[in-house]
Image 1 (tube, protein in one colour):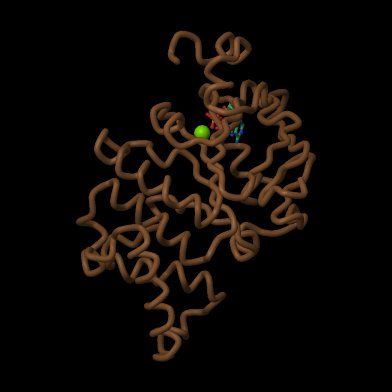
Image 2 (image 1 turned 45 degrees about the vertical axis):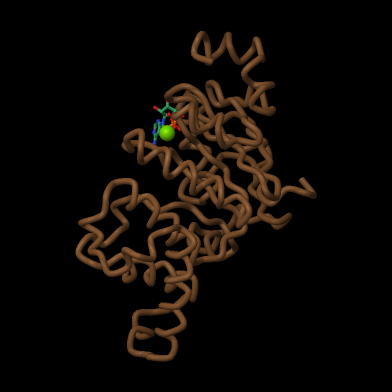
Length: 249
Ligand code: ADP
Ligand code: MG
């Protein structure tokens, strides 16, 4: 795990008799997009939640830059550099894009609401939020009310909010979900550029996006990783075809 930015070791989570994740060890290396694919119910979201800290594993550890963060809360993991994309419901629809992005930086600053009254601090936070919006391509919309953004732009804003925390690793659960072809294409382009900022552990159903983006792919089936490899290796793996991809790829 030495050269991995983010690693799990032997993560296990049971729901009753169901092994939702079963001994999952996975590495996210610097500079890569590592996709996790698998059929519905394979345990992908369960894995993500254990990495982010919203679900406590029955066994196993999570490491960020070699540090065991298994005991940390979701928030402390975020402050330690785990950049997860927020759910859409976390966006304040009546606020502008910039105001939402500033909320992200307030997380970054471990700030409390009283910081709103601190003009100097506010200036710094606003600058950092604008930088993230520029990076993501939403700067021209910074005054737009969030409710007036397209679905795809809201996804971009979520990524911008995560970016304000200067994450060491991004973790995303189905960012393409609900986007049309054009939105998926745009978000794919954006994620492609983001890997230089921090590596991305990407759970995604959209196979076009996965095969366009992923440096490596891990296949999760019934809670177990059955294969990890490059896009070509996964495409050509008989095990993977048998278990999951079938005729699709
Ligand atoms: P995926 O994201 O790959 O579709 P999930 O991680 O959401 O799969 O779910 C893995 C399995 O665990 C599924 O069979 C699901 O029904 C079950 N599961 C997920 N969360 C819970 C829960 N809180 N309680 C009981 N079973 C759950
Ligand atoms: Mg899921």
